[in-house]
Image 1 (cartoon, rainbow, N blue to C red):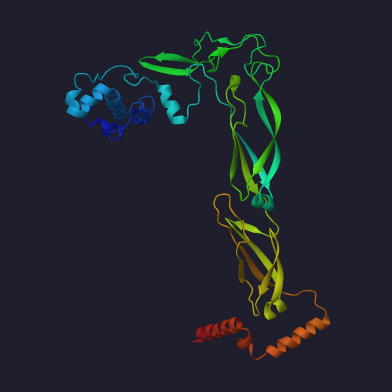
Image 2: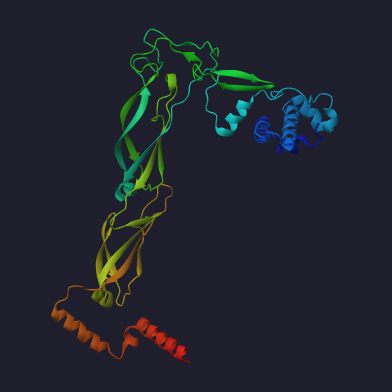
Length: 374
């Protein structure tokens, strides 16, 4: 058989624990198993190498001999042949459980209830300041008539005669032994001959449940609140799952949020931008005064420190960033239009002085056309 280093075969360190060895072997067994690679001689050889390596390293005495003497210390006891269970004590179905998540009950055990998710939509104010909200969720709860057993009051479940109460049955296919969930009791290890008239043997009933959820201040879209034990009830009195409340914050008519900062656009008049002044600006805590300096240009951003959000994830208090946009006046009467025309005439010949960006832009345009002619 293989003379490669057993640790290298499994891809583990020499001080690997028993759990690490088992996990590495399962991974390789899944990858190279002959049933998954029919006709592939290379995969079969790799599977045998991994099996041999695990059989040696999972045995404390053989591992000690191998660590001290190498292959010479285990040649007489390596045992290259044998069935799939050699040294490992787990079947092909165990490999599937390790890789794909398992979840089946062992030894007649009961399964924990399923976790539930609830999408909760909040206003920006609720998310920033926190709140307590009531939610209604459809779920399964333990049957009070039978206390979750599924059996009629005065009776009790009996041991499954197919699996002997272990919840699993083993099928032999050649030298492979495949373990499966018992088809009669579905892994519970027990059967109910006289079911409860309320839950019909399920041990659980459907119910609309009302819960109060405390929303901590500073949550944002994508955050999740876990309510332990508020999911579905487990089977036959097993623990309930958890409820996960997924947060989504509605779009706000004034503010947008980016992490701890708030953003808003503030429209100002042409005269206010030119002459300066003060504006009342809304924040989530009330109004504040925003000073607009003379000759403010559109797109200018003013930062109001500490007027943003204190996130639930950190203690930093964000800012409010106000971007001013100059609004062009509409619906002017004749007198107002005449005044604007007089103003425009007064600007004639000195555009570069009063409108430096426009003057620079027109100079660039002029140079552009001159370059095209040359």
